[in-house]
Image (cartoon, rainbow, N blue to C red; front, side, top):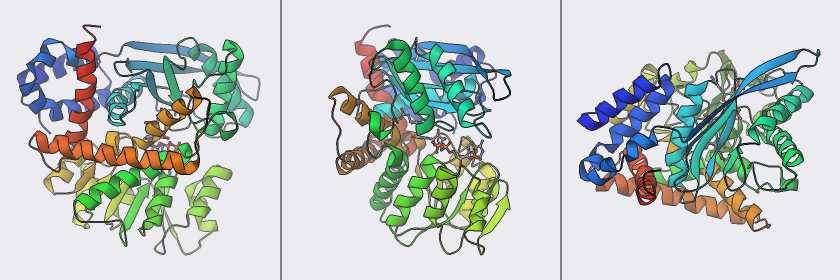
Length: 448
Ligand code: NDP
Ligand code: 2IT
């Protein structure tokens, strides 16, 4: 991926200077700029309106102290973030990541990507992301609760059902959302849909838990069908074993695929008979254990230390569902050599630029994250709608809406790629289609 347009190159340089030491953010911006070259050449009006200069500068960046008391009575201090990137098409919307690797550059790359992803969903949602360098691993339930309450005590000043609606991401699931929701309600004394991913007894949407993984498979199914393929009988690798990975596995298996490997940050399991997803769910959702524990259920499965090795297993389809930059150029080359035909992204930015170049050069069908994993936030949008009308739809109703949204996302990516002369390049299609809607809205609303 190389940018040739002089205006985009200059803006990228200025963005690098203004945001030093944030390589993930620059990576996300560079990828979008690469795709936008043919748009910028046709749309001088968007250049004149300063749309891109405004897009790469968050509307608001909030960084705050999160003090909490651990089980030994000692005060711990973490750093909290909320980056409200763009509100042109709707209230800020995006998840909260709790992981020790979190710093400004991670939250900014995620917030930037969220702008285009949310635009693709067809629902009115702006882009945002938040999080903290808090490490939930090994913490007691009481420690998690005290952290979440302290985080929300500060965050609640900046969010609201019509302003900014956070949700889950790595390390933030139903438990954490519950504690945050309780604290928001207590401080603000209002019961509103200020968070999504809530429990089903207090305003959560059916199918939100499954949505990102299911949506990934709905998108991938469309992409496969458009290219004369299907999941049926295919060998699939899924990295991660969290929320996205588990429900991607459930749906891929229901489509007749054989998922043979899953992972966590310590290592991966290989089960030549096909992953027993009920065992993975028990290990991860009930016991909060490690993927290695799978061997307690299936003695004939293999466990290997390290995360990268999963990409050396021969497969037809790879679904990275763990974290950013988990497939580098070397792993991508191994996937290609082993006959992999499809990479579709459940995680955000899981492929390095070198990996993406390798996919495109070798005719891999590539489903980019901001399109392929948009089902999670799309269903969050549906949760917001249900909260607003004070009603809840059945699982089947939400799932059907999600399915239709993923179909329309694939169509938008496919058509934009064709229109701008890059048929089959769904990354370019996603970036262009996501961008154009936001750009038109920004232009129409004046220089704000
Ligand atoms: P979870 O916390 O439920 O699971 C994360 C999984 O990824 C775990 O298996 C974890 O392993 C692994 N992982 C996390 N960080 C690393 C790392 N640095 N190296 C290797 N493995 C890692 O998160 P989700 O399933 O919700 O999120 C997974 C990805 O999907 C993220 O990129 C997220 O941004 C993206 N996403 C999530 C959506 C959602 O609705 N939840 C929506 C759209 C995208 P371990 O347990 O060892 O940490
Ligand atoms: O990356 C993502 O899209 C998410 N973590 C979900 C965001 C949301 O608001 O549901």
